[in-house]
Every structure is written in C-alpha cells, then in structure tokens.
Length: 399
Image (cartoon, rainbow, N blue to C red):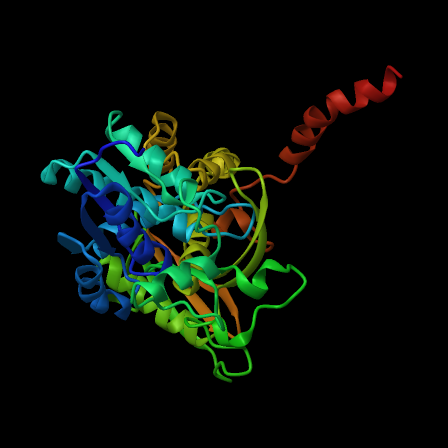
C-alpha cells in the first residue's frame, strides 16, 4: 500500500526519466500531477514540453522562463568566487537545482499540493540537491523519489515503459546518455561514458566546436566588470542571461570549455561526467584577470582558500544553508573593488587574458618597474628577508 497523496508537483524536464515518472505517479498514487518546467536556457526542448506533459496526463502545466534569475542570482554569485569543483567542474547542474527547487516549492504552495517529486536517480547527487532544497524551504513537505521506489531500475526499462505507454522521449538505445542542459552548461553521463577509458564520441558535443573545426584566426573581446559581475562585452551593456549567451556563442565557436572528469559524488561513488561550459570558462578566466589587478593580496588568498568549501556546498546541495549564506557575504565583500575591463583572446580551445585596466587598480608601475624609481628602496628588502628568515635560522642553529 502506498501512502495517500492528493496532488504532486513534479519537476518535469520532458526527458526520459520525468516523462516516465509523470505517468508512473498517476498510476501508482492515483493522484493529480502538476508539472513544473523551468526554462533556464536549455534551448528548443522547452517547446515540446507542454504537448508531451498534457498527453501523458498532467492536470496542470507550469513552464516558466527563469533564465535571467538563474544567471543573476545563482551563476554570477558563484562566479564571484571563481567557483570550481575538484579543479575542473564549473557546477552547471549544481547551480540550477536550488532555483528549480525554490520555484517548485512556491508552486506547490500555490497549488495546495501535499507532495513534490523529481527525476533524480538514487545513485546521484541531484536527489540530495533537490531534497535538501525542498526541506530547507518546507520541512513538512512529502517527497516522492520514484527511482528509490519503483522497479524500473535501468534506462532500458524506462525506454520500454515509455514505448508501452506511447510516451515520446528524446533518449534512444543508440544514444542512451543522460544529459542536463541550461544556459551555463550541458552535461553527459551514461552509455559509453561509463567506461572512463573510452573517449567521448565527437558527435555528442552540441555547444563547442572540435578544435579541427574551430576558426584558424582568434577572436578578441573585452568584458567589463562592476563589483565582480560582468556587465558588458566590447562596450555593449547586456543583461546577465544575454551576456552569458554571447560568451557561449563565441567561446563555443572556438572549442572552449570541454571537460572530461571522473568526479567524487556526494553519495560516495566516483562518476564520469563530460561537460561543455564555454561561456562559463571564458567568464571565469576574465574574472580572475580582473581580480589580479584590483583585489588585495591577503583578501584574495583568504577568498581562494574558501573556494573548495564553497564549491562543495553547492555541489552537495547546501545552497540554502546558513554556512553558504555566510560565505557568500564574505565573497561579495571581496568584490567591492573588482571593476574594470579585461581583454581576452579566444583561439582553438584556449582563452587567455591579454590586457586588463581599472580605475580601482592596485597595480603601481612606479613601484613594480625594473627601471630607475624613487618610490621604493631596495635596501628595505634586506631587513624584510632577515626577519622572515629568523625562525629558519634558529631552527637550524638549535639542531
């Protein structure tokens, strides 16, 4: 016997898992299912969601454009920290989940729903991210996680269920990859990628050109920053989403932002993921270039020491935690002077800073020059060195 549920709000992407879950919830719980689909820049796939959800039995369908909110309130705050997980992953999926969970809970309250559901598997990180978000926002909500309940324990079984019920899904036996897409990135898992020795097939990539296809001449661009956030490209002011979209276009054209990583999931296992994050890769490079000119050394080193912790909090689903809020306050404080312009060259998978300027610059050519100057006494270095060497000298003398 299953627990009685009256109405469920399902986080519905229209992919294989959530398409099957929509039908399964109706059959298993004999309940009303409201679908919520967040448009966070994943592209044309949003256009077919309403048709498929209605055909599969949704009683009400929410499809909302959250792209600007996603970039402004989730991507940009994380990129002020130069966020990266295990040295490579720019957290494209991890940053989207708290936004989806927040809006899903708002819809559940509006609809008077007594439960929410998601399509995350029982092996992955997303189940944790969604459910930590749900419970942080409503400690009393009932959560239905089909992957932890049903006997459809493989994508092959899901595709058979979908075929039996006439559910149109994008996954095929030829390309059984699990993908997640938003304006920041697209990820691929499963299929041949489960063998970490096998290279990802070239035909899976959709946002970045292969290096042999990338232009033979570089592109140069300038990105302007205000207090750590990008605000313009080549002098043209853009909204957060439009700015990231443009960085995706130019970065992707040059094959920038491909990552193939075996990462450590929060649930304990290693997982191989392939990611395309062209605009995010360009943005992070530019932001670090801006900070190099405008951020105090000790502030930068303190902030940098917190990046692994901050990234882990996001990766593990603790966006709505008090410790993440505290870290964000510190990070945002570190960005007060990170304003100015960075020039970049993009070419054949590489993105490099070729110039930076700022009215808040801490760089003093008068002090740094190798030519004659009258502002720095090189003799001062002798005492500085001897004082810093004192404990080393004593250590050696006392042995």
